[in-house]
Image 1 (cartoon, helix red, strand yellow):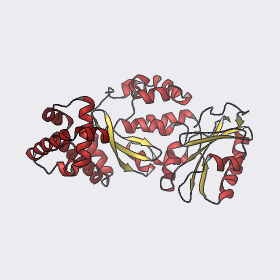
Image 2 (cartoon, one colour; image 1 turned 30 degrees about the vertical axis):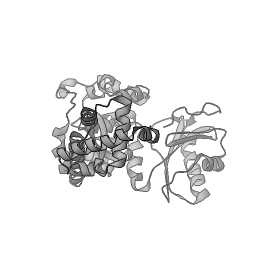
Image 3 (cartoon, one colour; image 1 turned 60 degrees about the horizontal axis):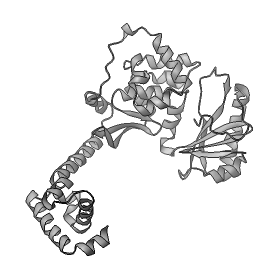
Length: 342
């Protein structure tokens, strides 16, 4: 998970037998020290994997607060320890261990998502084809405006149901995988799979940079090259994925009210923005650039109606007249105001 995060201490690859023997020892250290750990699991890899360069340890605590660098330092007494985002990496008996915290209510989903090498990422590409985001916290529907994500609706936090949505076997996933090829065959069995959707040129910039570094992903691309493309419908790189929404909401009906609520909030925001915005204020006052920005701040700090929750109920005439009156007062006390608000 952390890759080769430790650069200033000696670590080595562990053979499978010594790696699996170390897991319960790490779990015991983590569980007994603060009596806060309620779950800790080394993330499963395909069963014939012969050696390991690190150990990914997922854990959850009683109060859902992750351990600090200082606490893990006292527990494991490593030569080196670093924090990178949500992952804390340290050395223990010459093996890099990456500690990943997750809240208890998402623990099962996170463990399933991280399990079996890059399987979660590969499943995520199937979900992405539907306009969804599959991650360790659950399945989400990103809401976009002008290609910017402004919110996300949580669609599902049951991993098995996510597999079901994208047409994958729950039983096969639960049984696990012996080889990488088994994982690849599992993904390719989805009716939403197409080799071309995984090509680096069809990924967004973030995914492209991340996935080109992954050895498992490279091997999956090689697997895709061996597939008979005539078995699949032609791949279309769609930007509009709304045609999948009825299918998603049939599977997860509780997500529909959350989606509707977000859409209502967006509609209200757009209505407010149409009635009160910088262009309107600039037209009325003649202000531009920095001076316009200063007056906008003054408006929002001193006029109750300038909040979105009020603007949507006010007439355009009321808003325009209020801007005129406020700008007059602002101009009369310009020097004072500029001192206070610049």
